[in-house]
Image 1 (spheres, rainbow, N blue to C red):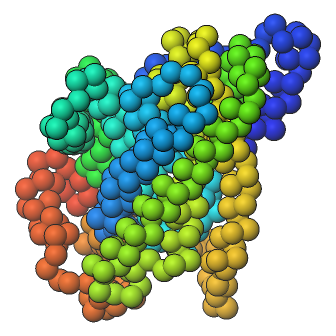
Image 2 (image 1 turned 30 degrees about the horizontal axis):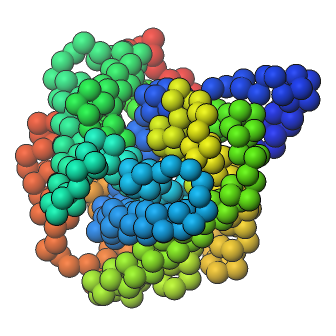
Length: 488
């Protein structure tokens, strides 16, 4: 998620409101973290899982896990320890251990959409996959880590507290993932076996949306991470459920989920931006502007250090496990990945409001400084780092223009029934068993082991999972009703 595009609109609108009302109506939109997590965030995360290029995502899953999980923990530790040591010298007010740990989780949540908008998925598939995958896993990990801290009793810290906190964290991560996979499989089985929604695009689309939202609500009811649950539910539904519906439903769901995600993002941008105009907290902070500037500077510096301490060492470790030079992460690519995670967004804002306000309000100076500093870091990192993203990527990774390119109208002609998941193969290469040659198959054979985890998963998926839950190649094509046929 990114605040870059709506910022001019928010600034102009906010300035007009403040001038016409003389500051009396500074809270047009009151940021409610519960509304954010229950209604606005699920469509965005689900669409990320539903639309993710799974071939690249799972091919680089270990590296993505390193950056998204281990990297988040490293950043969390550095920011928590740094704020605990440096904030005491500023005397900003009462902050306990839970607040410092909460700050570590809050400012470990990255926002890499600005970078994704500049990267070309076809030209740099490895880099795009790493940035996108790490961004999704990082958001989920930050929220899971934050929830684990909030439910942990830090008033009685013992020698086993760290192990207990780690166990609580692993439980939330594992249980949330398992729930998302379970709901995704159930949705595939229901749509494949039951004929309640068959031949009806409206019912099929509605059933998929309801099942996706059900996974998120169930996670919240069980005190799990809804982000992880709905993300993996989206992956499973695109792999199995999506292939069990009619062709018109496939087209509709793909665009419907993307549209819902975009609407939620835009509303979040305006939501956060308008709440940043709240005069109440800025009035409290204005009594000690030096402290506010100091806190914002410290947080921004710790974000830079924590990001560097996680990306560069973990990239070195990841490269040690890669045999092919093309799979290794170059230094310039590491800089882009590091830069992509410097921006902070709505997730950081929502977690900050959850930690330091009650219903969006606070009268405590320390809490007000934390909220306004979070707003400052989010706006500064998004505007400054976001505007410099394209020039940086153009300088480090200049595009290579091919002299023998096919016309765009020929390269973009793809059937509507192409699968979202190709099981490690090109989607065009194995449709309906047609032996369409793939030029890169020989290179892949030489650089990729023929017996790896993905190979055995494909065998298990083809033998057991797809016959039960459906998927590409295992369900007969179901024609739509004559009234729902698409006319050309």
